[in-house]
Figure 1 (cartoon, rainbow, N blue to C red):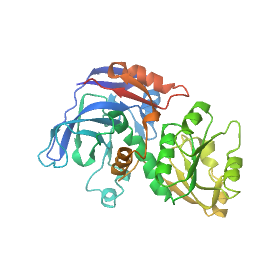
Figure 2: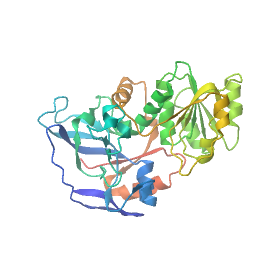
Figure 3: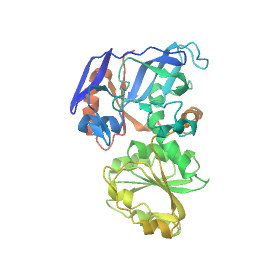
Figure 4: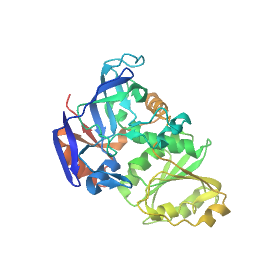
Length: 345
């Protein structure tokens, strides 16, 4: 099949590749329609590795995906040929302790699309477990369906935050994950979100997503804005979505006593934390890695109209222009949020 293959760092090729996939009784075969370009895909393209995950041989990229079921295993009952679907890209070991405990995203043996050595889905078809394949409502487009994967990150973080109705949250970073974190926090019950970044166009877009106050931290103080909006109390929740080391170290300053910090973005280097700031506020600190058990809820929120990701899909490329799409995503202008690649019909 013809696929977008990462041969090595800075070398992407659209070429034929043999991937042997035979559907089992609990699997479906999906014809891919739309695949989003994730920051991790771009990172592999530019650097060839993320932490311990190193690209050592040619690998197909892409894991944010939607498509149409074209073949159904004999034991599958909830899907049929022709269903429009999105897919959760991580396949855990069903017998692992993590899976049995319900934290399957933490299974060390998970097989996650476009994470070495597992091929991704910028290709015509993929075979996938039906249990991790979800039907899209009629009013949810393929483009929106491909946004469920990054939205799931925000939904998982919102769950970890244990949002109470009316909470005020800070989201650090207005990139794709930060934008989706805003939507997830509001859908989860937050009354207001303060979002930070240094790129004003992204902040301007974030301000259109709901009751959101943008803060350009290159020009103004986040703590001052939070203090003003909370009568000096502080934010109930801080979601750190930027992965910036300085931001990750500064999460406790805008937090209220007894508040919660959720680390979403992964810093590229170790972060020096002032633990005393967390202690004197009795801060609760949560971390997330990908997501678990949130796809159905994310899809339900989209289908109900309560959560709209359409403004975040800013750029489209054809599959034939996939290499251009990655070069664009690697150097996106501040007006862009999510790049998607549409495969041939």
